[in-house]
Length: 267
Length: 81
Image 1 (cartoon, one colour):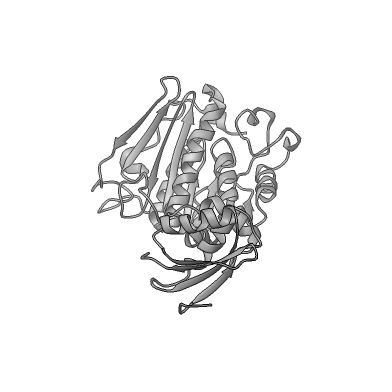
Image 2: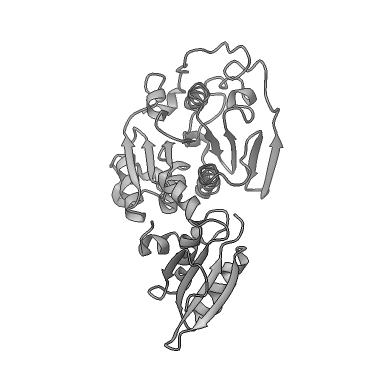
């Protein structure tokens, strides 16, 4: 049973017919892993902590840099130089002491990802590079974990949700990573700070809906946002790509792949 | 006083709006359809809002008794999930 304090903290959720006490309990019992404590990961981590998602894992090997603060709202000026996962944990615990935050200060690769995701109900891809995006997809398909993909650059963002058996995976849509240096990263191209807020908040919304089991998820669809034109589009995706090398009928990818990173992305 | 076969009771006089409704909702969600909840609530905002909110959620308001001391006792039958 909830304490009066918890009833008050989560009152705006509990009042909602779709959430109620039962939905709030599901959130408190929920476990979400956020890969990347950056532009996307920051709003996801803050909203999920505020929502009372009981266990939140956060993975990032980097330290807070002054150039991060324009968009990574979970970190403050005094956090510069601190491990991002530590800075994120402090903010999340300050928002909501009900939440257990587990930090992983490491790079995600083929050797650790399956172990990282195995205890979580839902995974958030808050990364900024294609090799890791494909790795997260392949690992989630193999481990049958739902995840939210998102990407942001300049004034644009996109996201889609993968749920095993309920639509295409990221690789069904984007077969392979683009050639190295063919697509600029945020670092080279820039990104408007609020873009992480828009798209990351939508990822947090998908995680919440998945945990409470209400509404329609962004499965089988890709949502794109163009801030300059102020247009959202939902593109319908093929329901299932039979010859997808990872989730198709005869998968040719049976081991995880560490694609090479563009050099400018490495520190 | 209890003209009904009350399944559960809750006192929401220790909290203010909108937590009054939230506290009542937290208890009624755990009950089965047809069960009866007895709610002790304060005059004023709670007595104006809580019965209406419960009705909006599909529950049946059975009776509201004025206890004459600034509190009311509300009997609600849980509706379909």
